[in-house]
Length: 410
Image 1 (tube, helix red, strand yellow):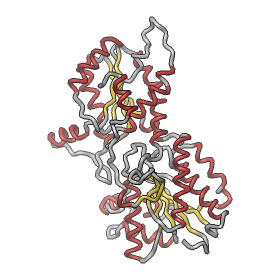
Image 2: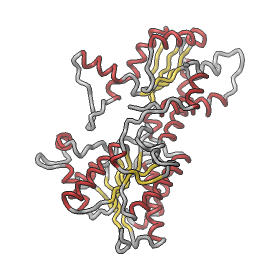
Image 3: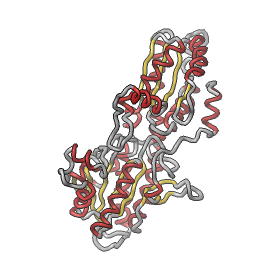
């Protein structure tokens, strides 16, 4: 990319929230400023598209005033997105028309391309999951093939599920697990509110059990094992422990687990289960379809997990097997994903942002991240065609297997 003339940089955050969106924008602004100060580029402007791809389609954006560039560092202390999110699939023409983002005879890809061209965008930073970044790659390719233009697309891999190939660790996943552990540290006290209490802690994670497993691990290491309990009282380490971790990667024997957990209920008077929202979804969908019910899905065709409610489904089944008198299903997802990024994630985001700005200046598009397919897992602009979701959690990891042994699940 030529250093003559200012570089017009655009930001867009998309998909669900994660503890990284604000920090990603802050870090990117920081490293673009550094590029100007070091003479790598002669100048830079920042345009923010509001509410993800919706903002591009309906021409809703703003240019960041230069006098507030330094103030953007404060984004590190807050969660959410500083410019808003949405779930929009540019290639789902019907959905874009239905939602009023384009007219009846408009192609969303063409409309988005025209907007970026009109705004003279040179670099588009997309902060989102695999869907967001693959859509950005489609848009960049479309502009090149249909209009002979070039927009460098630098993706920033955001998802608390940590389920994107071939990226070792996605932004926000570690923070979300930390926050989910904090959430359960309070919720577990509900085990004392009623005899034979069942608490089902549902964590986000459509295809991967990483977040559920890591949340359970962080709860036990950061809270449970640091508590001191007094002999003779009903509140014990055993009663506040995690008694089961159910994730999509592991086949669930509900009858077998019921028998195991009933023994725990009989001794402790309560049971605590960590459940990934993606667990058992295929069974639930099959039952709905067998009843002739319509399965709710989003614009990308994903099953709308909040509407089919896996937590409620499993809580009813296990409650009868273990003789629970009262059951509560508590979901930490929104609490966890809305947090500001922790020290670990801020470090990862910063490293990827620095490399991302360098890649943009070199004219190389890609999704920034630690490439698991390359020796040493270097941070680099990973080719978009290699980026996809659905990466399962590695259940053979030592920390996970040790935890399952400690709680008696294996």
